[in-house]
Structure formats: structure tokens, C-alpha cells
Image (cartoon, rainbow, N blue to C red; front, top):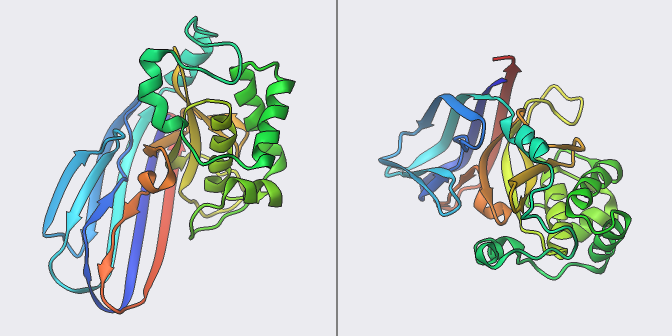
Length: 286
């Protein structure tokens, strides 16, 4: 599958401001079966310094610095990738690896426990979140793979998806209580439930080939990934009730949403700011 993405982010300021350093996580993560065909980045005003690197999470990051005052900042990324979906097929072909424990709460082997520990740590789960985790664990006999599949299906069935372009993700208990959540809200709820059973999870931002809602507009997407010994990081998309696959393109993965923001930065000045963005996605056979 070939996927082409154009992502335009525009900030407008009510009066001239000085832009602080910015970090862009807009370039695809080249994971199993994913090949980048091209990538281009256009920035106006042009930064005085542009440095590309990988952060501690393995995300491809562009660091930007600016000199002159400005009343706007526009960032346009364009890329095309080709995905053969081999990661999903590999997991299905392997079945249950010998290294994967068969019960919950989950315990990692010592050689992996230290590495994944940051992805297991979280704030104490609310009583309702723990109750959901225990209910699903009991229903699936404590089997981790069945538990994650049941969790994905449960959120898809019971949480109504909304599009909320701006603002931080809601807390897991808020999403569970209201039964409504954007993709980032559902991701945090999925991670809270999984982590309460000892599973290591991370927050992923990116794009998908098809929207979970019947809308003409396209948006950034978010989904959770869980680390499973012998299978690696496995993604789930509760907004569609499916595992992630060839139609999902990740640009950033981190322990929490702050580390996976596609654009982050600051400005100095008394101006108010207005953010708008537009995403165009085209997908088809390679």
C-alpha cells in the first residue's frame, strides 16, 4: 500500500512575536514493512538553524531556531510511504511466542523489564479503570493477547468517537465515565487499562488511510502500542476496533502524548495566537 500525506500547520499571531525553539515530529517512523519514498518540509519564515536528529524514543525530529520577529509560522510536511503490512502478518504467523507469558498481571523477563519499565509506570489507575481491566482479564482467562483484543473491541463498542482538534487528552476516567473520546482520549484509556495489568504501552501519533468517522476532513490520528515479548510493539486502533496495519503511518511514539506531539515550541510576546491545520491523505495500491 502506498500512502501520501500533506500536513499543513499554521500559527497566526495578533502582533509580532519572537519564536522560541521548535521540534517537529512529522517524518514517518520506518518500522517493519515501511519504506519512505520521499519526504519534504517547507517552513515559513525560514529558520535560522535547522538540525535533524533522533530523540531518545527513536523518533525522527527536526529542531528549529528562529531569529526575526514574525506574525505567522507555517509548517508543511509532505511524504509518501509504501507499506507491505508485514508487521501484522508476522505477528499472526508467529502465533504465541514461547517468550510470551500466558497470564495476567503481566511480568517481563529481567532482561526486558528494565528497558520497558518507563512504559509500565503510570499514575495509579482510577477504580473504574481497574474494574474494567479486571473484568476483561477475567472474561479472557487472563490471556494477554485475548485481553488486548477484548480491550480494543470494548473501547470501539462503548466509547463514541468525537473529533476535538485542540486541547490536551482527557483523563482515562473522564473518557470512561462519559463514554465519549477523541482518538487521543481512547489511546490514554487503553494504555491505563493495559498498564494496570503490568503491560508496557506507548502513545503513538500519526495518520491512517481511512477515517473512523464518515467525514470529508482528515485529521491527525493516535493509537496505543503494547510491547509483547517475541512480537515487539503491537499496535491497536480502538477507534476502528482493529489492530494497526499497513494503513497506519506513525510519526512519533512516546510514553505519553507530550513526547509524541508532531509540532511543539514556544514564542515570546504579548500576542494572542491562532492555530489551524489541514491534513490530506491519499492511499492506494503500490
